[in-house]
Figure 1 (spheres, one colour):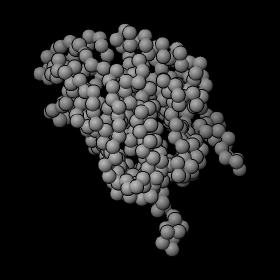
Figure 2: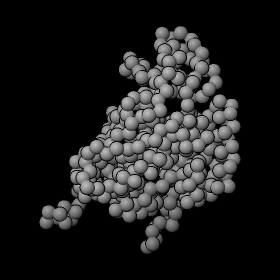
Figure 3: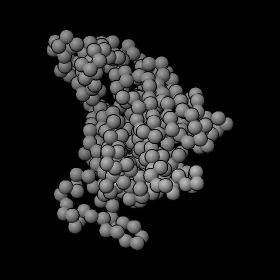
Figure 4: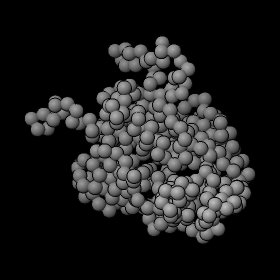
Amino acid sequence: MNTFGRQLRMTTFGESHGKALGCVLDGVPAGLAIDEAFIQSELDRRRPGTSALTTARKEADRVEILSGVFEGYSTGTPIAMVIFNADQKSRDYTNIKDLFRPGHADYTYHQKYGIRDYRGGGRSSARETAARVAAGAIAQLMLRTMGITVRSGVTEIDGIEATMYDWEYARTSPLLALDPTQAPAQEAAILAAKAEHDSVGGAVLTEALGVPAGLGEPLYYKLDAVLADAMMGINAVKAVEIGDGAAAARLHGSANNDPLTSEGFETNHSGGILGGISNGDTIRIKSYFKPTPSIFQPQQTIDTDGHPATLELKGRHDPCVAIRGAVVTEAMMALVLGDMALLNLGRRMEHLTKIYG
């Protein structure tokens, strides 16, 4: 499936080393002011080649809107956007066209389809997430009109965890790090792994502020379930926690419950979601990224005929995908919340009578 969402539907297309990649975003209400500079700024945050902490691949990631926008506003029709690839080096992959890279989707794609684009992983490449960021930026523009903001930051790199959260620092940090006191050690861990032709993993915290109570579609399209689906669908994410996550399993109910007051909740162990529905508190979700599987060390594998082989990888790869992945988590959070907001419009007669009454 290449489409995500129900009322706000994103379909992405394209491959890592193809001519272009992009998306079609359907369901955006007419009359939304489309800030193209903001969309581009989000892509700039995710784009490769910005520092020694990311891949050396140089892509401007300039987005072009093809449809659905007229004189700066959405028309209510599908918004199509395209991003042309410019710095493919497909020759870097010719030596592994018949080999399966450990940790990648090469083997599973081959088993499923019987054919695969070996150039950078084709459709399974994290480069596809640029299209998600473009679509997510439009979703963020929608959410802004409702007073909802989404933000993300890196909380952990190579086991080095943040002890404090500074969201303003994260916005400008090359690591998107939330803790300025731990960022130097986290950066050093990435560069050390890179020097050893290895990679490291990390964790990202994504939050949504200003979300009203009532978003979510029980029982089978719960807000937390769809958010988990959205984050797990990002390349390299292997675990997701909402609120206290796994730590909640080690608490008693008396400690885990969030007491209610006339001013709101005293605590937020639930991560802003109860019964699959937003409760009006900050939504908090943490996504855990595995180490980049593309490493420049000899690895044992097999070829397409099942024969043992040694993989010697070339190319340009992120030593830690969690950094650029943080921007993608924001996009996916925004798409989910935009979808839920549109779905929620028809849940009460009073909503309909305001329009048709």
